[in-house]
Image (cartoon, rainbow, N blue to C red):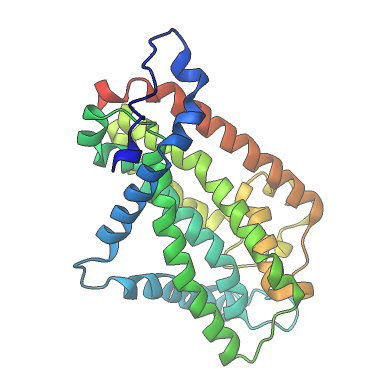
Amino acid sequence: MTTAEPSSSDPMILEAGRADRQYWRDVWRYRELFFILAWRDVSVRYKQTMLGVAWAFMRPFLTMVVFTVVFGQLARLPPGGDVPYAVMVFAGLLPWTLFSSILSDASASVVNNSNLISKVFFPRLLVPMATVMVALIDFAISLTILAGLMIWYAFVPGWQILLMPVFVALTLAAAIGPALWASALVVKYRDFRFVVPFVVQIGLYASPVGFSSAIVPDQWRLLYSLNPMVGIIDGFRWSIIGGESPIFWPGFLISLVAVLGVMWVGIAGFRRIERDFADLV
């Protein structure tokens, strides 16, 4: 695509620090390349696969079943109010699955596109960011499961459901920082790709996915909220369940600050290592 490259009318100026100053302008100029990479990732995910779209249904559904049995039936943890435990679990599983998918897919994206990175100039930030589109499509598919659960349990959400896009955006913000940082570290230290799945697995149980954060003792809730996904999952669950799962606002604000901090660190770390990508991939 001709728009993916700088216009021939734009002069090429070699000046110290110029690339850094206009980096974000270049990100915007190469926006069509972003959509090309995103469409390619979507095609690779769903084209000529045995499970395809079915996997986007099976993974969250089976995880929800396991968590409902373990935490709801065996551990007898309270769901909070009269909400079916399966709905409570799936409301927390949706943002976590979106977060973990972006982190897992983005972490290996730069290495997987080594041929492109070593031969063509463009802002490397576009490569891990393109994986966000695949995760969003999986998320949209998972929403149909949530709708099915609500119909099955005759559960009607309140007006808070209108605020769900806000918490989806916060989930994306929480995922972008760690995803960019992980993708840069995998380029520099190839064995780091084995660390990412372990972090995702630990994070699943360290976040209030299979249980309500309300069961955490009050003296530990603020400290627990340093996990950025705690406040986001609580907010996402509130947007679906409503008053049955109120937001712990002090912890939510702490999680928001943590999201901004992690996002800034991730972007800064990616930009610092990005300069050496062509030599490292």
